[in-house]
Length: 412
Image 1 (spheres, rainbow, N blue to C red):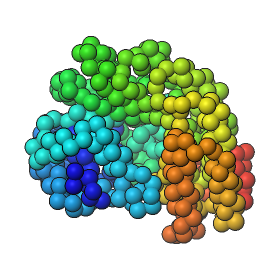
Image 2 (image 1 turned 90 degrees about the vertical axis):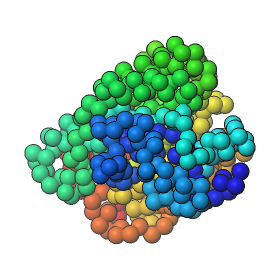
Image 3 (image 1 turned 180 degrees about the vertical axis):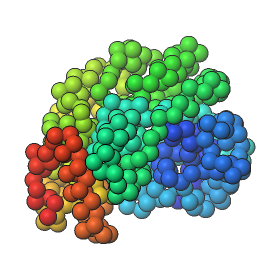
Image 4 (image 1 turned 45 degrees about the vertical axis):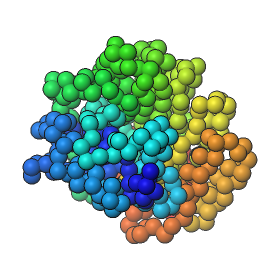
């Protein structure tokens, strides 16, 4: 299929629908939330538009035509960047999966008037029980509560650290719209893939409701499910329903071991995480320990990777990811000599791993992340000052101390 040979083509605009936590509609999860889509001079949002209207909009028609013509799409620049540093992008992963599934018949899905989406990425609000260091008020209701307390002492917080990190309260209830769920129930009859993220999706009743709907319709055996979860909450009903589906993947957001985890994913508890993690190990689920590689955990990467590998489970893999925002948490800010030593140690550990497909994927991703971390950081001193300032503010508020998880030399 010639389209797949294009460095700009992606199958997703022909089969996939994605929400943001605030109800705005995105081309996919890789598109920055700041890149709003407009339909009829209004932001494309489930508060004002239905799925069908968006699906057949001029915006989507334009994107599909650009894909077919082999032209770059502005909203897809994150995947293009990952491709450029050999960090296998979502674009490449999705193209590969659907071509392997449909072969040359995939061409029937690549048309200017595709049927309604069969792949749903639903982020049903920002309800969450954690306030992770690199997260924001946009994705966590707990961050909202904390922000409302912090601004009493730091009134310029949003201005100093960016509106995308502080100051956006997403506590609307667009996902309670009855018409939205009617559309979702209709799409469930043909759905192929479901992604749930948040917020923390295990806390949202709509997630389990849709999974039950797929079982009720007799569709579960044909549906892949991916749940991005912080692993703090693993209801037994989730565990019991896993093996009903064609494939379930738990994308476990775990950024460190012990106190490093507790610090980054406050107020998470490492021992509770391990208990919940071990609940899903006996199932047929694929389990990805998805770690956001950042300033706070760069020197803990090996310990986390070793913990994942200690289970020696075929469907379990370490899946490091690149941190894009906030920029002042990127590992590239670490003092050069120490950073080089950490990189050397990580590479040495990778050399000890077997050459299996799962290990090779993790090693390939980490290699690209390490290359990114070695690149010169624009405005390093400014970014470092922001990092130090936000770390001090959060430490004082949460009664924590960054020196207990990383050496202060990293900040030099």
